[in-house]
Structure formats: structure tokens, C-alpha cells
Image (tube, rainbow, N blue to C red):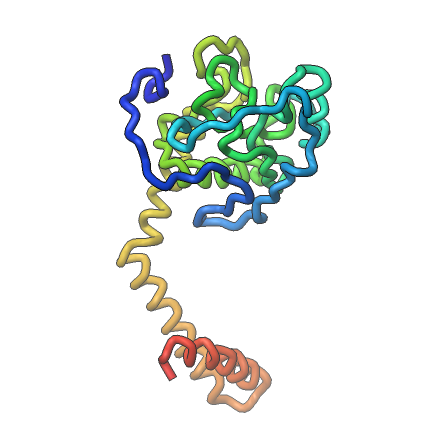
Length: 247
């Protein structure tokens, strides 16, 4: 039994939880990735065997996958899952393809991706065969961005981010990556985000901003092209300074 699953934890009811989670927005990250695209409505679903929905408080884990094929698309996975597997729609809630994160299901959809463990998991899949190659840097950044976002929504601890093959009753190599490394990297991201919000980080950023403005002001005292450029850059700050009540 998976630690922390609904079967072995005391459920604490929450008030005002959402009944749908579409068009999710990226959480703050120490790096930049493209916004998540919600393409759920464009994907094939079954009209005769639709997926059911779950409660917000049921979600406690994330299940990481790879598609096991190269060149696949969310649309293709949806067709295969409906027409071949007989499912209600695509199994994954989120698909990573290259440098793009796609939301492919409402996060509360009871979809099929991790046998016997779908009731409490959000399925995130990297499009590709990771048994034959490593994650690219873009795929890893997008995967971590998606995981961090889902963790933020449901308050999921790092230890509850597991590979498909780490769940009971799932005899598979999927996702074919080191989940220990993934969890270690997620812990590092947690620390970076904590530092980004700390007073020490804010003081460091404030010093860098003030130092750069002073540098450009000194440059603007000259008479060459650089002086004109620096002056124009400083003047561009005027509207924001007024907005903040600093002018």
C-alpha cells in the first residue's frame, strides 16, 4: 500500500474545495518555461464510457510516466486510449512534449494511467521513449514545472511524487528515469523557492536594482551614445515609480 494514500490516512474534510481544475497556471519557478496549454476540449473522449470525477481532497500523489514512443502527440494518445483501450479519454492529466506542457484532463478527472492507483493520483507523462534516451534539459524543466504546479495545488509532499513503476500492482519500467533524482531535484527547487521569498534574497535583489540604476545614472552624465541610451532606460522607469508612489 502506498504511504499516504486514501486507504491508510485519516481524511480531513476541506471547505470550499474546487470541483473542477482546468487551465491551471504555472507556479513560481526559478527558471522560465512556456505557459501551460489546456487542450482538454480538443481531445477525443468516449461518449458511451465517460470518465468520472474525483473530489479535490482525494488527490494525494503524482504518478510520473513516459509515453514509451517517440513522435507521439496528446491527440494520438487520446485516440489510442479511447479506441484501443476503451477508456473514457486520454489517460494522462498532463503531457510534456518537448518544451511545452499540455493539460489534457481536468485534474479531478478519474482517468486511467496507473492501474489500481488512479483514485488519488495525477498522471504526468513525458512524450518519448525514455528507455532509449535521457530526458532533454527542456523536458526535465517542463516535467519539474508541471510537478511543482500540481504539488502546489494539492499540497503534495515530495515523497508522494512517484514513478509509475513505484506504485503497487504495476509491473512496468515506466517512466524509465531515476525517481530518486527527480525527488532530490524537487527538494532543491523547494529550497530555491524558499530562498527567493526570503528577506535575504529580497535585500540582495534590492541592492542589485539600486546598484544598476546608480551605474546607469552615472553613465547618463556623459555626452556619447551610451549616455543617451542610459538616460532613456532610466526614464522608462518613471511610470512604474509613479504607480508605486515613489515619484
